[in-house]
Length: 429
Image 1 (cartoon, helix red, strand yellow):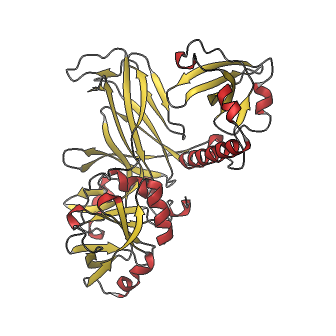
Image 2: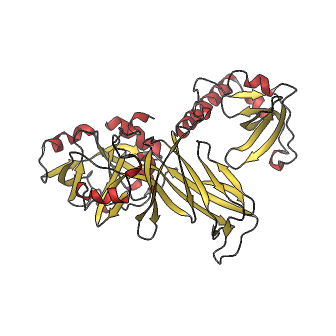
């Protein structure tokens, strides 16, 4: 993935003074008629992550990318307001890249004083909880602390909660983010997965009972000397289970240091099948996993907030353009395409902005002619049509208020993931 197109150019904002009052003061810079509410793109791999937590004990979910969710004790009640006991299932999804946002179907418009603004996301998330398939809520007087690892390092962002019935965002507060200080974000793609020849007690893990385990595969590269430390007799090892990492090797060293590593059992069957060809395929598979992990661990700033109800939330700033080009846009789609079944987006990676448009009619269309832009349309069957940054050259020559025909061509691509969007966007720019 080409990260330079995810991270926007640094915009000038007045630190934490970018509050609701400032948003209203800049109303004249916004377009009033751009569409915002879109449907989620179905048939892709965008799905929530699921965690299990205790309803009675305080517990923290480690999201593995510098972020976390902190639940207090007795945090949940059912729909009748009665305290919940036992285990609770938490559904979590976060959105950072333009591809994430496109698949989410979450509106990226903010209405203030009757004027709509494009939003630049510093990290959106949806969080819900249930027990045995029935929704639960956060208990009265309790709050959940959500720490989102943002890839946008502009310090100050506003926090919004979405009204899921109307799709409108409600402004809550403005806060600074805290820089992430973690070595876990550094993942080297050239390293191969490590196998540890250690004995771990598995009696508390019935799913492992029938496996002939000959070793343990560490799911991230070990730094120099770590493997030796793990195999020292003075290092105490045990197998534990965590909410975010699954099976984890916990190591306590003789210098009273505790280390944790995500692991998977390596069985005799795996060892016998590990021919050179299979080992090569396994290594390639781990390389892809590490690459994805590196992308997920790219958080630069942690943005923390306490919430007292579940739903959809956003760290955002308003996208303001110094010299916007405002046109009347008509979008020409591939032949025999029903525009009612199409989701159409303007992506401006330099601004980290994404705007949904109506593909079936004339639109008040705004873009920055000095920035890189592209149009991506999701057709029925998740087929993709698009217009490159070069295709905006004619629009750049027009005067404000003129009609512009934007012709999108079928790419032959079938969308499966946010990564597909980001890769195609990079090609268009």
